[in-house]
Length: 275
Image (tube, rainbow, N blue to C red; front, side, top):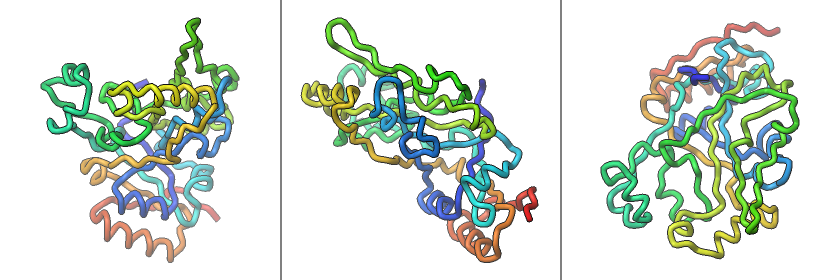
């Protein structure tokens, strides 16, 4: 299904303040989201820690359950933002010498453009994200099912020579039908538990550590969250709806946030009336 032109995110005033102040959207690991089942696969307890998500809905109709669960009827907002709202990155020519010759040769025009994440963020880390590359899809529609083979997929494939591979694409894209009212789309980052430097320089100890992560022998060491910068265009076209029962004090806070960090952004009243 083609991605909607805009998506919606229910959030507290506290979360809105961070979005406006930092101009970023936070991705959280699957073991930190509201459905604890999502982090589990049929063959690993660790791999959910390697998927980070930012959860949105395609429904333009306000949802009372989502107001109450994610924003608060008295102190939250619903944010409307264009799909793919993130800033894109390029790798400078000065940084290309740090990459493998194969990567440089495959870069159009000898440079890396349109990346989803700043590659330089991961030079000295023990992980990186698959979705850094521009040809990796970052936005996915959640599928609702009660099929346990999809909810808890088998993701590890062991070869006869003892090697193994973990296909994480099946994680983070299914939820039980009890959540179907959310009509969820989510941005997904898939962590690889090995640093870019270790990949380029074929550091065997780090490659073996990545194998141990897949086999639940050690923790992946992936941070609980990662923040992606919002593009100027997406930020300026953002729209906000205030919660149905927003208190006068919280409205003062909301207005102050908009005035300081995002003057000109449209703020509308909720269409829902709650007693």
